[in-house]
Image 1 (cartoon, rainbow, N blue to C red):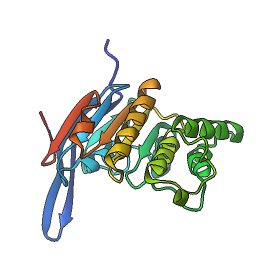
Image 2: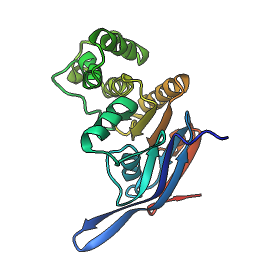
Image 3: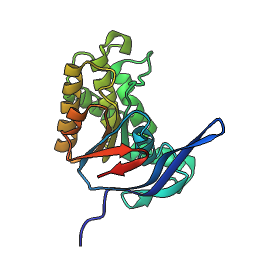
Amino acid sequence: MDAPFHLSASRIRRSYRIGRRTVEVLRDINLDIAHGETVFLVGASGAGKTTLLYTLAGLEKPEAGSVTFEGEVLYSQGDKAECLRRNRRIGFVFQGYFLLPELTAFENVLLPSHIHRIPDATARARAENALERVGLADRMQHLPAELSGGEQQRVAIARALINEPSLLFADEPTGNLDSRTGATIIELLLTLVREQRRTMVVVTHDPNLAQRGDRRLEIRDGQIVP
């Protein structure tokens, strides 16, 4: 018997009100992603790709339809349970980094492990290892303001991976970076998830970067097009 999909979406719908007008952002989205697969979502601005990413990640509840992750239905439990699920099993890399400015790179990476209540010695070892893996062994005690954009994104990647999630999302992870640095970041992400057999879903505006995944899906007018 075939293994179940790692992540599935069934008939996802989402709309927004703009004044008196209703804009349909997602229209009956169906999507199956296998364990260990890397999928890139592309599309024009406003096509719905980031809304879909947030819906798949458990951050924005759809108006209709369902999302299943590792056999469990998202949005079916209380807010606390959903937050714990995201903290322990899902990693997220944001375009804007979202590092706390008063914390060092090491402390920023360590934060999710404290929420997960991982023993301190284990958490610190994981944070050090994660920062070493992203090439920041010598920048652990630097504040975000002392790091370049590429370095801040590397910290964000290390933070997303510290709890060893099986599923990683990235929303325009190269959007604030120059093309050379962006290519390096994508290469780093692909290397890490493939080595560790993680599933990854990435939103990107760059069609060339999107060719690096196992699948490239285009969203147009709220639907996935062939």
